[in-house]
Length: 130
Image (cartoon, rainbow, N blue to C red; front, top):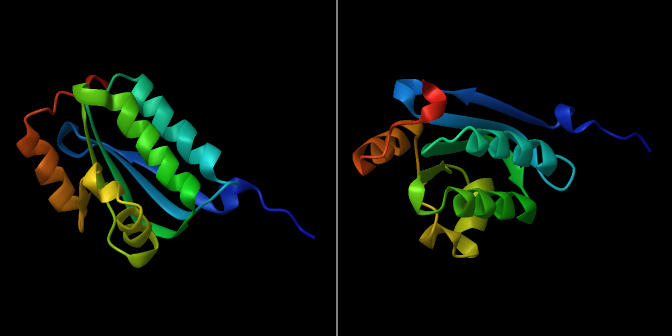
């Protein structure tokens, strides 16, 4: 049986439109790829950012480990920051809604909507964007 490297299954890309940090994730988020996603999010939080948008638009499958990673990221930001999630397809939005995480993770259908929400929060001074 052939094994896959997690880099073949998931992509992570950091963008900073207007000083707001966006982590765009694509592919599969599961037990194999979860550490890659966790590391990328952890590195961003460690930079001291105050706002973060996680864009799941290109995610084809998200296992429960992805939900756990999102919640741990939210907890690490605590009350000092804003986390918004773009979940616009059934493979990402449905598990978030079924587990009730949409009650604590602001979900948005588009990146533009998420960016506007973060801007409207009034917390946009990411130290990592300077």
